[in-house]
Structures are given as structure tokens and as C-alpha cells.
Image 1 (cartoon, rainbow, N blue to C red):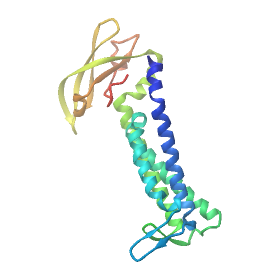
Image 2: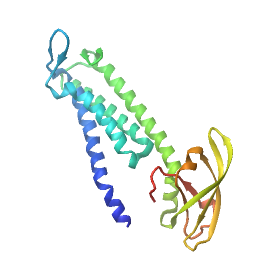
Image 3: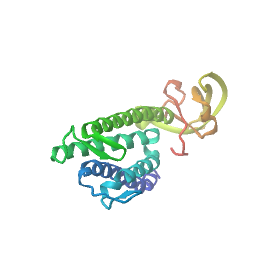
Image 4: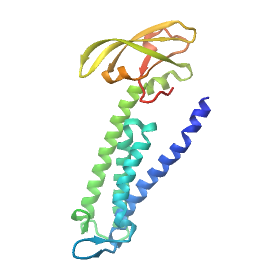
Length: 231
């Protein structure tokens, strides 16, 4: 069953990998080929047939698509990963253009929103990448706490997952409250342990992550409230 469930995710995983490659390629081309784009302008608008000219908009669409598609695997970290990837590729493209002699780092170029030097664009791209990395780290920490990811790793093969119910609600501030988590182990014995959760968890399916050999050990039990009903 576990192998069958894992197999269902392979197409989506491959699609996410392809979309990540699209983000990298499009933002790298957008900056590395910026001096090679030939624009045709009339009285009201300008256009080009070069891929680099439309790459930023296509790259932005790829960032959105990856953020949505990868939530199954990266959860709250997905948008941050996409931004970090885009910013890194964009900065790398400008460095490639400077290294190839297409533009000097202090030379300004009219691109998208005005005249800025390659050095300025590299700085902006690095800032976007750094912001994305911070977003990914914070989002990852939130997701790990909600799904009990670290606890799953800590228990390893001794991990057991049981459906749980939440009772009671004692507010502790900032939209969070203390509840009693109840579950039955493989032998049908009922166990409970306390947990602090956000109010949103009351409307989701709850899972108890516990030690299969010591299900009554409260210190080795954690609550997981995944967005999807998965084990």
C-alpha cells in the first residue's frame, strides 16, 4: 500500500522538477541574454520575438505554478523555494552576461522598469533569493511543526500513526488553545495526551504520532493536522 501511494506522487514530483527547471531557465535567459534582445517599436508599444524578452513574465507564471504544485511536498515552504530559485537564476544570468563581456557591471541598460546597471540587478536578485530562502525556512518550520515531521524522523521504524480526536479548548493566546488528544493503539487501548494547536486544527482530520512500542508515553506522542488526509 505504501509503495502504491508513493507511486501516485511520481507524476506530480516529475512535474514539479520540470517546473523548477523552467523557473531556472527562464530567469537565467531573461538576464543573460538581455543585451541580445531586438525590440520592434511603433508609436504605442514595443515587442520582440526573442525568448529573453518574454522570459520574465513566463518565469513569473512558472513561479506561481511551482508554488501551487509543490505544496504537496514542500507545504508552506514552496513559494519561498520558488522565489529563491528565481532570484538565484536571475543573478546568475547577469553575472554570466558580465563574464561574457556583453555588459559591464556598472553599465546601465533599459530593461523592464527602467535604466539600471547590471550590478543593481544582481543586488536586487540576491535580495529576492535571500527573502525566498527566509520564507522557505520559516514555512518549512511551520509545516514540520504542523505535520510532526521531525517527530516522525525521531521515532523512525517505531512510528505508529492513529486517527485521533480533539476534545476541550482552553485558549492560551494568539488563536491557539490547549486540547486533549485521544487515540487508540493497535490493540484498541485508548490513550490521551495534551497538545497546543491553532483553532484551524479543530476542523481538520487529526492524527496521533506515537511510539508503537510505548503508545502510552505522552512524551513520545505528537499531534499532526495535515491539510490532506494522508498518513
